[in-house]
Amino acid sequence: MKKMLLSFALIINYKTFIITALSVLSSYVCFHYNLTAKFPDMLVGVAIVFPVVFSIGSAYTRRENALQRYSDFKGHAVALYFASRDWTSSKEGDLPNRMQQLVHDLILKVKVMLKQSEAEWKQSEKEMYGLFSKLSGMTMEMRALGVQSGEISRVSQYVSKMIIAFDNMKIIHNYRTPVTLRTYSKVFIYIFPIIYGPYFASTFHDYSASLEYVMPVLYSFILVSLDNIQDHLENPFDEVGEDDINIDADEVKAFLNQ
Image 1 (cartoon, rainbow, N blue to C red):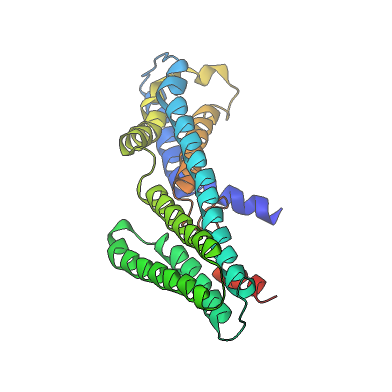
Image 2: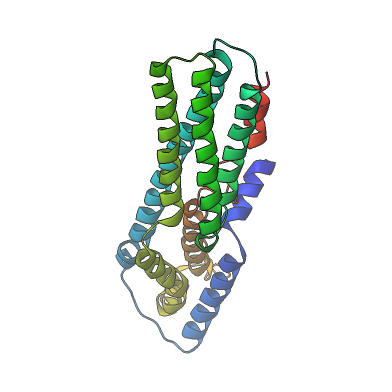
């Protein structure tokens, strides 16, 4: 029940109540001054609902792609740790411990970067590639500990795949749903319940007393809620919405310690 209420609170916010209040006010003014019109209902679906649903579908697809890329990144990082621990014939040195810490630092850095704005990325990306460089150097240390050249080639591929997965997550973070489509949807979502005041006013006589404002309230709640859902899906890394990706570097490190 608590989780359901939290989910409800994410899609019903201050914007919902502001647009609802303006919609009710518009309907009241239009009815009071006898400004009525029969606008076509299908305009709502064509001009608003279809673009918003398309945006939600696009954002959800990006989230699923982001999950796959993060899984690739984490999986290859963990595989590198196991390789440093199990593939070496010589067990001297602290390579596994250093590799474990580096895996933790890489995942933690990804988590921090994906919550930053694009303007903050330049320095952080430089630090990230410094960690990749350190990771590459550690894989070469495995050669001196008895790992065969074929296996060294394989772990080098793991590093390469991690870099590709990171770059994919970067692209997902920086390039999102088309800005013009989002702007178009928001403009119509916020003004539609207001400009449809004459239409709502024309339906007042179709309802019982005290139910005249049901339609403007419902339209406002539905449209703004759809927009809020899209907003929460738009950035799958900000950890605001319930559908966001949870990146936990400490949890990964704890698993490696078992």
